[in-house]
Length: 200
Image 1 (cartoon, rainbow, N blue to C red):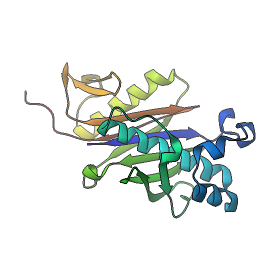
Image 2: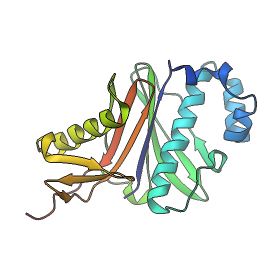
Image 3: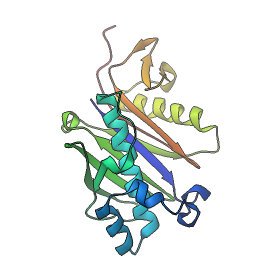
């Protein structure tokens, strides 16, 4: 299964469009994406929604092909509408002819995108976002353990999320579940495809 997610803190200093390199848009976005940005009344939100969609699709693609490198313009986003505050919007990302389904949502001061590959089209994807003041690497793994535990009716203390790409361990044994972690600014986020526990 391939799943990826990306979160952007819209209030983080890195997210100010005026602080980006003048050629950032040209390097990252295709012609249609740049035209949509020029026409948008919510340029910052669309900018980072497109970015998060590209990043999440890249992470999903990387699961299928570890040799893939992130070349943002190769990930072409189709997002018919921006999500409303507190809501979500569906779209897709095409990379070298392969389509990744995308869900983008705005949650408070962040935008979050989750991508899934064609082989995961019928699978249930669970995701969560959390604002944190803790060290982000530790916070995102704690959120992943809590989210996965709730989905599988386990105690979070029974789970450990380790490695890159992340692997979920249950009492020292790996669970066949695909997990994606993300963090930026004040936010951490996780997406995963649940799977059955390994035999006892």
